Image (cartoon, rainbow, N blue to C red; front, side, top):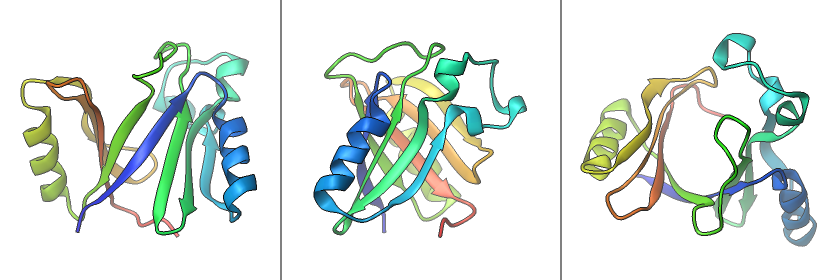
Length: 143
């Protein structure tokens, strides 16, 4: 079974926004990490401001998961209308590849499918209709 979740992208206000959502809906973040938490070999050198931005946050609201992150200097600021993605969590690498290859056909791949330092097989693209997608398979299940 595939899960689809909204993924919001901010220009440095992700933590503030998610703290507001948490104050309204209650509960706790499943995960929150900053760009500064990445291993040094995982990416380019970052400014202190970028290191303090949110790399990923996930938060349960009822039976749904709201996820988000901040942009950074390397990716550039996002504009409204281009500040969200649809995130798909697949059940296998094979399913991940089928979904990624099918939806990205004639689109623009922004991150090819690859193994990540956070234990997932993950990729991103914009489909031919301009919709941003993230496809993920957790090799190491999150608790």
